[in-house]
Length: 123
Image 1 (cartoon, rainbow, N blue to C red):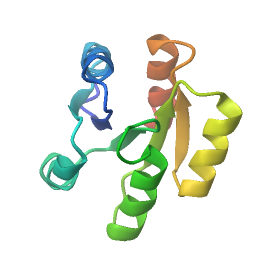
Image 2 (cartoon, helix red, strand yellow):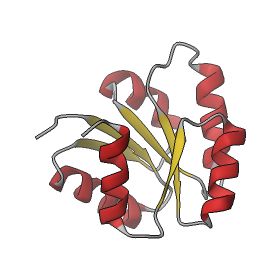
Image 3 (cartoon, rainbow, N blue to C red):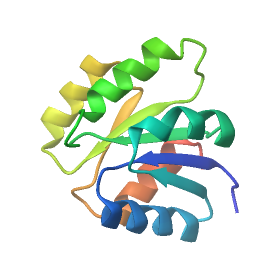
Image 4 (cartoon, rainbow, N blue to C red):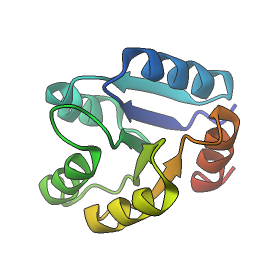
């Protein structure tokens, strides 16, 4: 068990629960939120090793959240990755423009998502 901590932000309760379960089953300590207003508190209390932000959310896009994070938490040493089921080219572009540390596509399923997270966290 790695014990690496991952914080997930996703507006879909169903997707969030499925992703958190998959992460926990893979040995990660995972926490998630659908509410951006609580994100700062989660970030400080949980102190994650990785933050995953869904791109397509109704109130504010994940790319905007990423930009705000990078600007608002200048001393943030945690990698922030955008995650989405959108076309990979668009996801890559949005991650680059948002200043994200990278991106993870949901298109290939949870197993590929977990493999990519393992690569990011050095497993």
